[in-house]
Image (cartoon, rainbow, N blue to C red; front, side, top):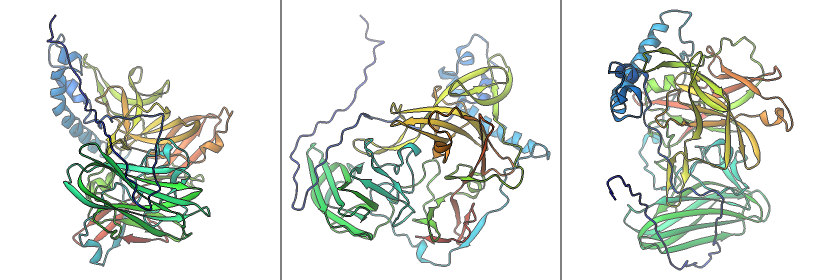
Length: 527
């Protein structure tokens, strides 16, 4: 028997045994149980299968595998160059279309809004002691969970993002007899002396209590938990903190905030190495995963009398001018002027091994997003959400096959360099509608498209009542007004939604801050 063809997979399994030492004032020992277990995430896809690669390999003899199969090693090697050629070809085609009024891009932005920052204070580097992720709760998890990204709840009801009141960023987290937690890897930080956990909290229900804890696992697998129970909360924001004396190397740390006996709001948590709580500041690791980190300013938000909208930094002027990934969505009445024509559903071209060329048309076929030509289906894809997930020892970013949700695409449209897909989701016995942002390129995985962001489409839950036969028939985005989403239903109803792009670009030379939205009647707060 030959062992040459055998492969062995291995996995590290860590067992921890120890005593959980509850210090004085500790009253928080929690156990979490859930039906979903995640041991790892699939990393975000890198690259795509380029049509120019197939055009190159078509010069090879027809019997060669690297001409016939995009999964061959030779084809993938050439694809490293083919992707660049695809981008160059797309740019040339785009410039050629813009030579003629009938085919020119009508989505080019011609107006942005400017605010000058006169203060030097906003530009003083402050650093961040906060080692938690997403502590202003401005980066959302997938829409169906209503949680901030990177924070876990193990499918327990009662935890959700709230706009009722907040300390910073426009969001807090509502906890109603439930908890949120986050784990992080601290194995590279050496010996840790003291750890201080702090959070802003206020009660919603009279008599509700806050329980907060820090659990540390040392390199030998021993676990120690330090906790605090606050049973007298105010209706106004107060900061609570606890300090754990660790004095050893730590493999992982987990923090937990729990409400007992009613609803509370928590905001601006901070975990820092040291013996006391310092002023809260957002972690330097918190930024949108689909944009390079441009963290010159710690926090930028637009405030009005009734709400706060966080703004996200864009690193370059070119990306800022072209970005079409919405951050918010709102139902609006029909616009006063006609918004047709709508954006097309085509993106790039398809090249076959027989040297056939045709435009790539994106459709929804049998509940999947399909890559098609005018007369045939080339491939069909499911959708997976890219998300920050709190695993057992750290917050990771990627996708996984989530069996707790059913995602059914209904229709799609190409907008700029993105594919917007309207989906119907079933999650925890609830039906909701979401708008997902994907890439209109053939994925390397071959089986699914990645959603880099999704938004919950409002009102659908009321219009599409239980037992109703009305459903989405098609969607579109105006070519001339790209922030208007049009949804058509099977009963002839047309619904309109406003897409918002809450981004900013900072030009350091003259300290000018540019936004894509006007934010009338509001002021910009820079921190």
